[in-house]
Length: 117
Image 1 (cartoon, rainbow, N blue to C red):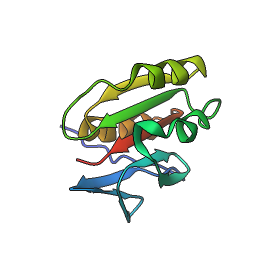
Image 2: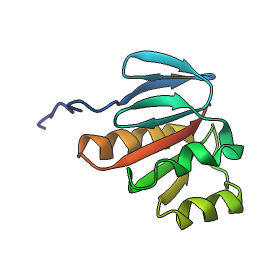
Image 3: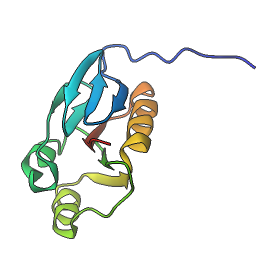
């Protein structure tokens, strides 16, 4: 089996996560976050639609990590995001981290809004 090293060029990958933190680009960030290929910022959770709506035009797909378990996001939040042209995929945060990294390594325009596990 041939192994290929994943490279991210100038993009910011999610390196890991744990109870109430994420490690992004080698830095530990506590609490909920929003990460794109260019950096990471805090995210106020489902009530903070503005942080996610600001991504419209910059990313094609937004992964929303719902913590340790997959859960539905508020219907009005989904409607706002999709109305702004963002593709929304909801999954538990661990899956969102992995999927974000894979698509980021392919050069795709993705972001992840993540609630801690």
